[in-house]
Amino acid sequence: MNFFLLLSKNFIAQFLLLLSLPLISRYFIPESVGALGVFTATVSIISTISTLRLELVLARKPENIKSNYVFSLFLIFISLLLSLVMSILYQMISKYIGFNSIEFKWLFLSSWLFSVSNVFLYYYNGKGQFDISGNSKVIRVLAYLLFICFFIFFDLYKYEYSLIYAFSFSYLIVVFYYINFFGLSLFLLSGLRRVSFLYIKKYKNYIKFTFPHHLINVTTSNFPIILLGYYFSLEEVGYYTLAQKLMLTPLGVISATCSSYLANKVFSKKIKREKKIIIFNNFSTLLFLVGAIVVVFWVIFGRPLVIIILGESWEGVYHMAIYMIPWIILLPLASSMSVFPTLLNQNKKALIVEIVSFLLRVSSLAIGVYNDSFNLSIMLFSIASLVVMLYQYFWVRGMVIKGIEHDRV
Image (cartoon, rainbow, N blue to C red; front, side, top):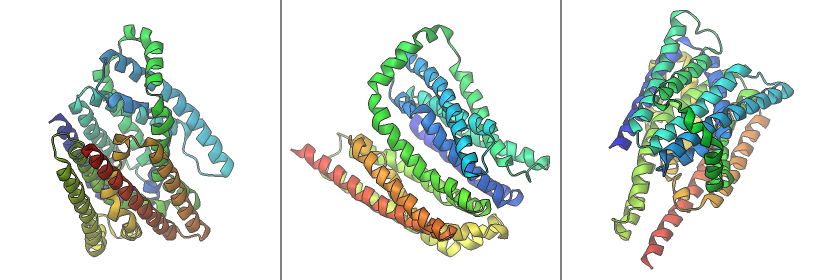
């Protein structure tokens, strides 16, 4: 029940974000949204590096609550150091290549706060306190909207980085919310070194395979925005960023829900093997139809909806989503399968697949950049994503059926 409470609050948070889009489009120019897109993409990559994705360990049911608490403190400290190092490195690279870099203090602060909020999120999920982690998502969005309204009221919305400031302050509010429950027990710090060493030794495979896997996955998702923000205008990046939010946010909620349900059914020992295969195939068909219906709906009604909801100046969002169709149509299906390689102990191959996927997608973007066409970059990136997702689906499907049939022996 608590898990579904978390999903419902996640849905509420995403729904509030969608409701905020008309407000953002009325007051903020595409360049501001593009700047936010580049900023959040950079923060996502840095925050993944800053914790080495070891916060995933906290999501497991803890053998010792105190040890999880101490390890959470260790990750918060490590994320502070790595966020600082990566933010400095980003500034150096940006200046070297002549990129309009983000202010250091905001990049560092946001990356660290984003990392800390993830540590807290998995810590409370591991304890089964889904109400705390679920509330944090809603509070984060409400704080974000509150700061946006503040900037609009005081006529500060014309500043290019106003949305970035709202993003940073919203995560600051969330961290304070978590700290209210987390507290700080100084007497436990005496075991910080010992507990951290034991956790890292026990879960060293997370650093070897899971971290690179997640890092490449996050980089693949966010690198296009950073790369295109360097070679093209922030206005075009703004259209792409908003198109992503409109199309991928609702599909992401659907995928997260279906992924948990499907994994639970396929790996359940109470369901017969033949029925598992039927459930997997039926769910695959259903998720493909969801993507297809969304695409057809967008092609027919997308343009008038964008003009009515966002305004005529944002019509580029509709055209950008059209170029993303090959990616969108398979997204619900592919995202719902993403957890299966880990559950089937295929982390090594999953890492190889992610590396090939990253190279293929970056190559597709490079072709568009070479031809000085933003739209071509997005279209080729979407086609490359389609090819990758098709391979991942058939690979996972083969593993699932083989695994189920192997149980029969």
